[in-house]
Image (cartoon, rainbow, N blue to C red; front, side):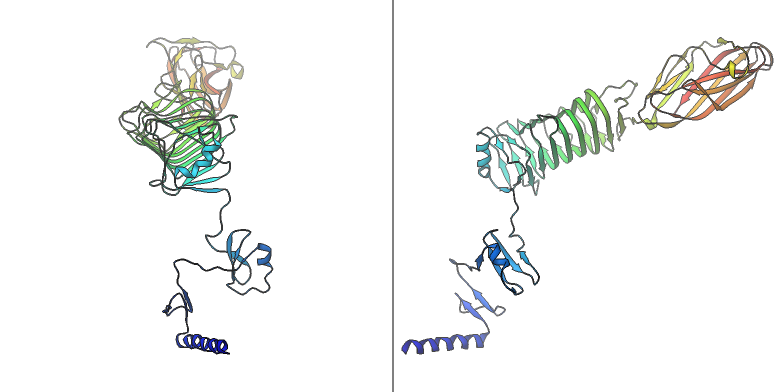
Length: 477
C-alpha cells in the first residue's frame, strides 16, 4: 500500500509538471520552451525501433512521420504518408570509399602486392585532402574523384609515378603532383581501354608522362603548371583534348603525338610557349584518319608547332583541319593552287589544231610552274590537282594571251575538270591579223573532290590557223 501511494504521488507530480510547463525534460530540469520533449546526455543516445525490411513494410497503417531503423539496409526510414523514404544522407552509395589518408588505401596496397595501389573495378574513390602515396596507383577501371582541386591532392614525392598500369578508368577534380617523377605511365593491353581525365591540375612534376595503346582518351578542362616535361600520346584510336591550359612555365614539348591514330581533336584552351621546345610535336605520327585543332590560342615568344607539311609555310598534312589563333589556318576551306606559263618575254609555245569544232578541242600545252600551292598539287603542266579531304566548290580563274599564225581564226577557251571540258565556261576570241596578240579570261565555279584536277583547254571554232601561247595563269581558291 505504501508503494502504491508513492506511485500515485509521483504520477501526480509528473502530470502537474506537464500541465504547468507543457514540456518534458529527460536529463534536464529546464527543457527548452519550444520543445515538447528535450533530452540531454553526454553518454547515451536515442534508440528508435529497429527492424528488418520485411517488418518495416509490414507495419499496418503507419502514421505520417513514423521513424524506424532498417537493420537490413542500415538506414533510417520515415513514412511520408504514402511510402517509406530513407533519410537524406543516411542512404549509402554502393562501391564507394572515402580516402582521407593513405592508410585508407591499405587494402588496395595489399591487393597490389605492396608494389602498387590496385583499385577495385567500378569502385568510386573520393579523395579528401592531400594524400601522399608510397606507390603508384593502378586505376583498374575505377573512378577517382575529388571535390576541390585546391585541397584534394595526390602526391608522389619520392620521384615515382602516380598512375601506372594497362587499364582504363576515370580521374576527376584532383591536383596531381610528382616532383622529380611522372604523373602518367599508362599503356593499354588491348587497345580498347578508355581513360577519362577532367577538371584537374597537373602541377610541378618531373614529367606529365605517357599514355599509349588506348581506345579512347578524353582530357577536358585540365591545367598544366610548372612541369619539367610534357605528355606523349602514342597509338590511341580516339584522342579528344578539350580546354587544356598549358602555362608558360612548363618545359619540354607540351604534347607529343607518336604512331597511329584514328582521330585527334584538340578544342579550346591555350598554350603559352616561352622556353619550351614546342607546344605540339606531330612529326612522329605514322597514320591519322582525321585531326583537328580549333580555337586553341598559341602565344608567347617560343616555337608552337613541330610539324611536317608538303606545303611550304605550313605545319600539317591534309588530314588535319586547323583554325586557331597564333598559327596558320590549315583547312580545306582555304585551299588554293596556281599555275603560270613559264616562257621568256617575247617567246611562246606553238599549238596546232586538227579540224574545227568539238573534235579540235585539246589541252593547252606549255611549261608551267606554281608559286602558291596549299592542298593543291601541280601535276605536270597546265594542271592542278585538289588534295583536300572535303568536297567543295572553288572559284577558278584563268587568263591567257596568244598570237594567231593565220588571219581571222576564232578560238574558244574552256576550263576542264578531269579531262572533260566544262562548256559553261567557254570564252570566244578572234585573232584579227597574223601575229595579232589576243587575250582571254575564263572564269567558272567548279566542284572538286580529292584527286580532281583542273586544266585550260582550247578549241578552233573557225579558220585554219593555230596559236602561239605567250602567257597563261590559272588560279583555284
